[in-house]
Length: 322
Image 1 (cartoon, helix red, strand yellow):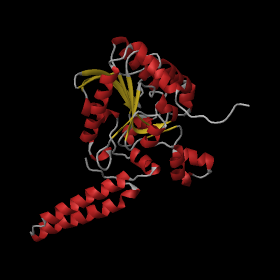
Image 2 (cartoon, one colour; image 1 turned 30 degrees about the vertical axis):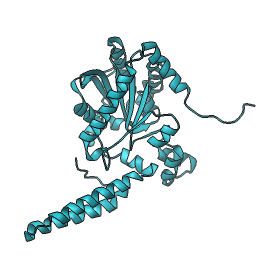
Image 3 (spheres, one colour; image 1 turned 45 degrees about the vertical axis):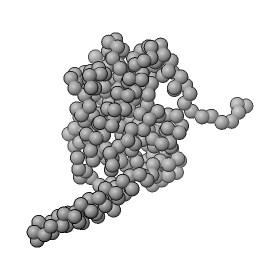
Image 4 (cartoon, one colour; image 1 turned 180 degrees about the vertical axis):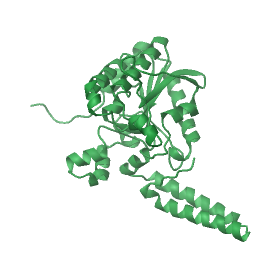
């Protein structure tokens, strides 16, 4: 898939792509064979893109994670699974399209797969509330997880949200309680749970479907207790310091791996997941199947204890208690 949206740091690639188009146009108009030059230019574009993406700052990774053409949950479901049967509604209020999911098979392996869903245009973004789930979204997710637990089917959650919806209607229907119940109940699920941050992993909105035996994160995704803009606004009283906040928050895959908040980084295609949906889906599918195979060897009691121990061990504290 070719990206129609250019990120600020992709200027050098954009210039080379412009020159490539000029070269191709010149070849057509003048009927001159410049295939060698075209191939060299394409190689230069690939090399430049690879160099840029290999040295992204934390803030630049945040920008990639928010790329409007990045694959979302339904894109992965279509690319990785077969026999998908979507589940709707929370049986209390309504169907929240900010979280989607259902039963499916990944290379014959039965799973319950669910995740955050964003839109591609104004209409679809309004329909799924820009990927920000309301209480009914988390209750629907819990309903799906309990169904999976009942039938002994592993759970895969795909996380891509800047956070839960914090509007008045969410407060009226108890968003904090809905997320808290999910946190509690996910520790008691007896089947393997694999959580994958595929884009933005923002705050409690991400954690509401983020308690797993394995936490995977895509190479250019991020996972954070607060957005860099929100952090900058609090600490420096100015969102212009978002890049500084992103570095301080330690939100990239490499940082999370060092802090033992994530278990594995799933590599993205050269230039980001938005440039090649199939390659990205193939990479993620391989990682999921490998981890599911490893987790399938554990008993229900071991899975629950493993999940509990993992999250109890998170966090490094220094100092003494007075």
